[in-house]
Length: 213
Length: 191
Image (cartoon, rainbow over all chains, first blue to last red; front, side, top):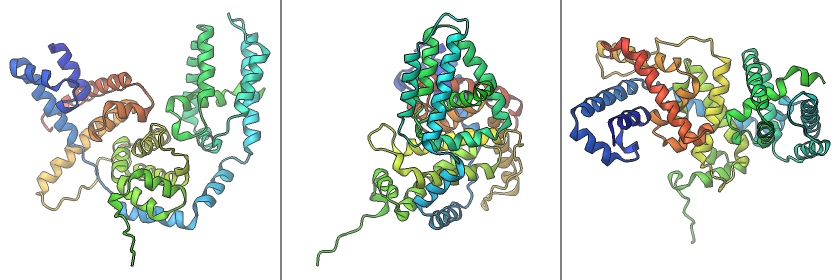
C-alpha cells in the first residue's frame, strides 16, 4: 500500500482499520513510516471529534406509547384505507390510466421534436399497456407525490432536474430509452424506490406543459 | 400436561416479527419497534437540525412499519433492518426539504449528572460545533457519514439503503470528511 492510497482510505473509512479492505497492509505501513503514523493519529483524532456529537435521546418509551395508541385507535386495515382516501381522492385505475396517457404524450412530443430519434406508435401503446398493468401499491407513490406537490422548494428543484434530464436526453436515443426505462422501473412500492427514482417521478409529474396537454 | 413454551422477545427473529406484524399483531410490532427505535432515532437526529423533526421521522417510520409490513418480502434482498433504514433515510430526505430553512439548535440540554458544570458545558459546545458542521454538508454526504461512521454500517449496506453504488458511497464519504476537516479547522483549540 502506498501513502496516497493510505490517505484515500483514511478519508473513505476513517481510522477504524477493521473497516478497511486490507487492515494488515495498513498496519504494516503505519509501523514502517513516521509520516503515515502522524496521518493515522490525526485521523484517529478526527474520528474522536466526530464522536463528540452525541445523540440526545428523547423518551423513546413515551414515543412508542404514542405510536401504540395511534395504531390501536386506527387498526391496520382501517388506517390503510383511510390514508388511501386522504391521499389520493382518485382511484387506482384512473391514476394509472392518467399516467399512461401522460407517458404516451411524452413519447409523442419526443417524436415531433427535431432530434435524431423517433418512437413508433406501437412502442407508445406498449408503454401505456405496461404502465396499466402495474399491479403494485400505487397509493404509496401517490402519497409521496401529494406531499411533494405541496412543496414550492421541491418544485424549483424538480424544474432544474427536469432541465438536466432533458439536456441529457438530447444526447442520444439510448439516453432517451434509459430515461423512460427509469420512469417505468419505478415500482409503486415506495420502500423499494430510490430517491433518484423518486426525483424522476417528481420531474415527470411536475412538468407543467405536459400536465396541461 | 403439554405446555408450549413461548419464545422470549429476544429469540424471535426480525423476519418472524414482520410476518406477525403483517397480520396485525401489535405485540410483535412493539417488540420490533423497541429493537430499532434507538438506531432509527440516531440516524434521524444526526440528519436534522431540529429534534422535533427527528422524532417525527421515527414516528412516521413506525407507522409505516405497521401499515406496510405486508409489503416487505423475505428473500428479496433487503433485510428488515435495511428496509427500516431505507424508510428512515427516504423520510429524512423528504422532511429535510420541508425544513431546510430552520436553524440549528445549539442550546440543547445533555443531562449527565456525573459531570461538573464546566465539563458539561465543554461537551455541549463540542457536540454543537460538530453538529452544526455536519448540518452544513449536502444531505447525501451527511447521510453517508451518518450511516457509515455513526451507525457503523458497511459501505455496501449504506449503498443499498441510499440506492447508490458502493463507489458512490466512497466518493460521498471522501467529500464529507474533507469538508468537515476544513470546516472544523477553525475550532481546533476547542475540539
